[in-house]
Length: 248
Ligand SMILES: Nc1ncnc2c1ncn2[C@@H]1O[C@H](COP(=O)(O)OP(=O)(O)OP(=O)(O)O)[C@@H](O)[C@H]1O
Ligand SMILES: [Mg+2]
Image 1 (cartoon, rainbow, N blue to C red):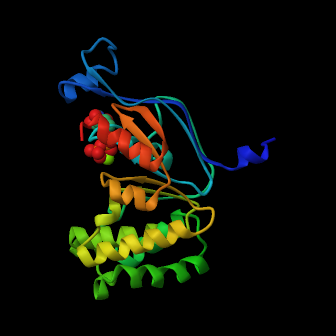
Image 2 (cartoon, rainbow, N blue to C red):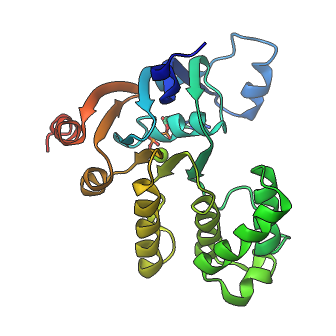
Image 3 (cartoon, rainbow, N blue to C red):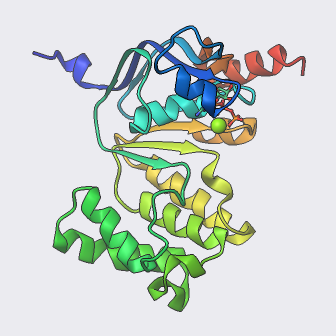
């Protein structure tokens, strides 16, 4: 049985490690399947990472390039699995990352949205309600019914954002995704994310290199450095810690 406070944990990382092995070339990678002694470099993308995020919290994940932020988000969304340690995620996760990944370029925008809705577990009626909302937000005009191979990269990202932000998530993870499309559309995206975040009980984990955005959206900050958690506290202190560690 879970206690009440246990119920309220949205995301929990316990001693999570994610390592990647880098080989000299594909041939070396192939031989490593049979021979564990093939030379390689081990990258610790996440290293003994432990933290807890409560339901309804808005947390920023900050750190330099390669610190392990996207790795942690991908573990939360289930795109990758940790090498060791455990991760608990309680709630439906919607991810604003790699927005145009996973679309079938031969299907139209509409067909892709219907497919995603289906994979997300929505029924026919729910998909029929969702699709016009996504269509309207994405502003693709008649391209919504054209095969996605005819879209520009900005158009694909707009469709991805429109879907991921339309499905009422319990947990929203955002990875630098707020500069989707052109300036005007990006503004619209920021407003949409703010709207989602103001909903009660929505848990948000937000990766950004902008300390002003982090402070605007989040109350707590986690600082990552070479895969390790180096700070966990109020957002203002976290940003100060991060800036100091970069001599700023
Ligand atoms: N598929 C992969 N194979 C090998 N190494 C990887 C892979 N994915 C990530 N890495 C490595 O793991 C480390 C962490 O990467 P990650 O993408 O999590 O960083 P990040 O904090 O999101 O950086 P950025 O601010 O640049 O987005 C980096 O050293 C990266 O090169
Ligand atoms: Mg990243």
